[in-house]
Image (tube, rainbow, N blue to C red; front, side, top):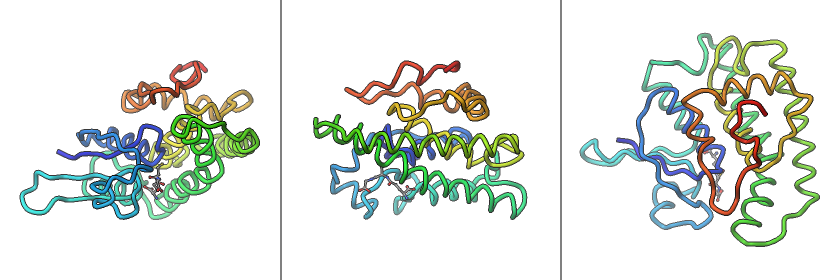
Length: 226
Ligand SMILES: N[C@@H](CCC(=O)N[C@@H](CS)C(=O)NCC(=O)O)C(=O)O
């Protein structure tokens, strides 16, 4: 059985959890606070970052996978069922471009500042968040929602013609920003319709049910009609 070392509000962990659920990979969850830098954790991943996956029941050396892209691509290669990257080289390039968009651009411009100000400063350090940083993250989030609207006016899913890994990455990152009250959905109908469909999936519901102690999400967070 696989173990996934994750953090509830880590978007990269959420991306892996959603992908594992869609592909039907059973796993146990271990909650890890990466900023604590537990020696046993950094021994598995020298980068000290969630997510990490470990399998200890193979006999011999444990198998350890680190980094959300390496993990999701590993399961794409290892399991043929429910392909998530696309049917052609061009489709796979587009899916990978958008996974990188959310993992790099959305994370840097929206989730990293929101996590620093609303989660780490407030819930861990018990300090006051920087309002200017939060407002700037909100402005960037709005531009990202505009871009998602633009894509969904031209294709059925963010990945392209089929649901895929770019939808999973987008949903993982947006769900964290939404938990941290960083998204204003009004005026973004295509994005809203798409996210409502994602929220109704049984493979995504467990993520929406989870809470971080002392940091509740806004009331609309897990509602299908928001
Ligand atoms: N490229 C990595 C990024 C993972 C990442 O940045 N995880 C954050 C939590 S959301 C973390 O562990 N940060 C602690 C650190 O960087 O020291 C991936 O895709 O898995």
